[in-house]
Length: 99
Image (cartoon, rainbow, N blue to C red; front, side, top):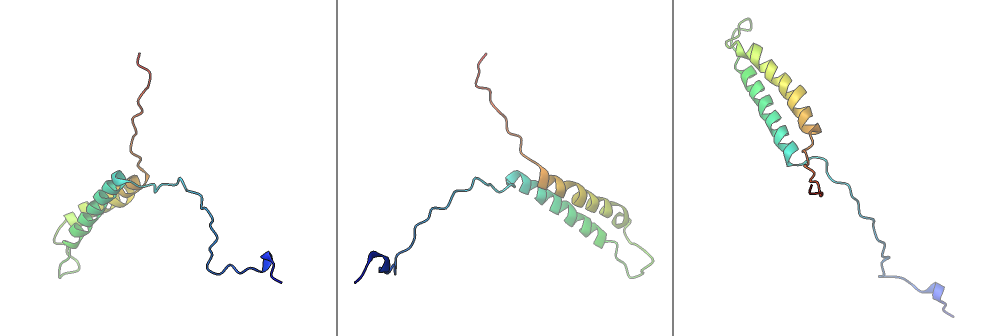
C-alpha cells in the first residue's frame, strides 16, 4: 500500500527563485582615483617624515620632516580620503524638450 505521500524525493531539488537585488556598490572608478591620490599624498608625507631621522636624537636633519610632512598627512587623512569616500560623479541630465 503505497500512497503519494510516502514517495521519496531523493535526488530531486526544490526550485526556488531568489529575488534580484538592485543594490550597487557605492564606489566607482572616480572614487578609486581620488583614494589613490590620497594614498600617494600620505605615502609622500611618511617619506618626508622619514628623512628627518639622524643619529643625534636632539637634532633633525631636515626641517621639511617637521613642517611639510605633518601637513601632507593631515591633508591626506582628513581631506582627500574622506572626499574620495563621499564624492559622487555629477550626472548631466538631458532635457527631452526642444524649445
